[in-house]
Length: 190
Image (cartoon, rainbow, N blue to C red):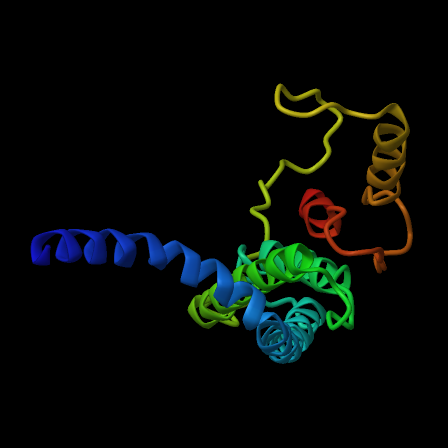
C-alpha cells in the first residue's frame, strides 16, 4: 500500500504542475495586468528618450544606429497590443481571465526583452560620412569618354573663352558663380 501511495503521489505531483501554472494565470490576472501597465509606462518613457535622441541626431547630421527604427516599430506593436486589452477584468469569465493573464505575462516578457535590447543599442554620435564625390574633368570643347557634354554648356564655355582672349582692351576679369561649376579651371585657360 505504501508503494502505491508513493507512485500515486508522484503522478499527482507531476500532473499538478500544469494545473497550478494555468490556475496562476486566472488568479494572478489582475496582478499581471497591473504589472504589464507599469512596464509599458516605463517602456514608453524609454521610447520617448530614444525618439528624442534620434531626432537630435537627424537634425545635427549624426549617425543613428540601424536597429533604432525597428525597435521603435516593435514598441509601437507592443503598445497596440496593450491598448487592445480591456481595462477592467473583474467581470470576465474564467476562460477570459486565463487568456488575459497569460497574454499579459507574455507581453511583460516581450517588454523586458525590448528594454534589454534598448540597453544594447550603442549610440556612437559620429557624423554621417559624406558621399564620395568623383572628381570630373572640367567642361571643354572636346568630347570626353566619361561624361556627356551639353550643347548649351559648350556654347557658353566657348563664349567665355572668346571674351578672355588678349585682343580686348580690358585685362581685368571677374568670374563669379556657384561653387563647383569650374571657375578655377576656366581661369587656367586664360
